[in-house]
Amino acid sequence: MKKYIYADHAATTQLDSEALEAMLPYMRNEYGNPSTLYLMSREPYNAVKSSRQCIADVLGADKDEIFFTSGGTEADNWAIKGSAFRFTGQRKRIITSIIEHHAVLSSCEYLEKIGFDIIYLPVDRKGCVDQDTLESAINEETVLVSLMMANNEIGTIQNIRELVKIAHAKHVLFHTDAVQAVGHIPVDVVSLGVDMLSASAHKFCGPKGVGFLYVKEGTVLHELFSGGGQENNMRAGTENVSGIVGMAVALEKNCREMEKNTIYLCSLIKYFKEELKKTELSYILNGSDNRIPGSISVSFENAEGEMLLHRLDLMGIAVSTGSACNSKNTELSHVIRAIEVPKQLAYGTIRITLGTDNTMEDVKSIVDAIKRILL
Image 1 (cartoon, rainbow, N blue to C red):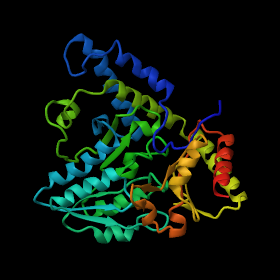
Image 2: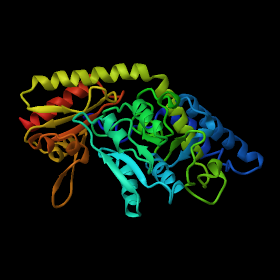
Image 3: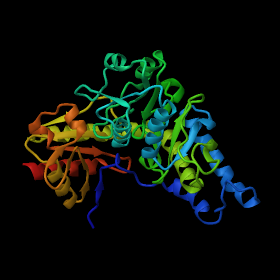
Image 4: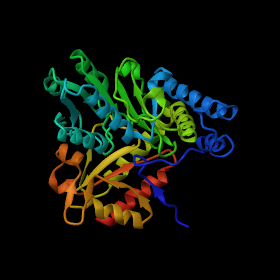
């Protein structure tokens, strides 16, 4: 049977076997509610506590600064809306960029409808926010700056540390959507200086449906859910014990093996570029050279990204696309539009995100398949 090549690790990753093994006891025998007071709750309670400490240690945070969520989308919503509602009637401006994930953009659009002033910063052709542009956008009404650490479509890594300094110089909070970054590049919240940071377990070989929001000590947010004392009275609801445990195990393992994984993934991307260059295809590579390991966005001239995605799928290869189709029109991705990819190339954009389970043979097969489709 022909091997199916999965090359869309930015969308989701396979659950790590060690994470799964760590989760199983809390899905079967150790099923007690960690918020109860009797003996049966002790093991789940301790598991949540130790997982929180593990995640905090990886990020250079304090355990009380880690708040568990259902994933990156919830964490982004909480950081943005929680900051906005804290300042209701006082400050009304939130600054973000035009290439953010829709969890951030939709949260901002919601706030815009109820009277907040949302500033969407442009980016350059590599997907980077200009520091002077950010500085000029901040005024006395600014509540929050929310800029992603690494873009999910083109892989570009922002210089978050310097952007944070600009916001803090004007006494403005800074949140970063680090969903694509955590577990893949070094992330130290103290060094970065961020006030809030979002992450999602399934992006780094953890389970789906769980993530966390880092909230720096002293940062005041509006509570997310009412109804219980969980997460320091900020997010009511019985904890997803097995998910939290699996997330901590997967994150610790990914960070422990990060250097080795980065070297390997960079070798795969280098080989992809070399093989693609040998073809007669006309294309450009999108984004910055400072990118998430294993990630590459390619735009092919006079091609259709959706067609490429579906043809590759029929050939046993899973990739993503930088454009989205609806039933009436083919619309360019907001990211591809923002970095001004020429129209004759923009519609032919695909995203390839490789993982450590991919091989050089996989890379060769992907390039050969693209060549067969387009030539």
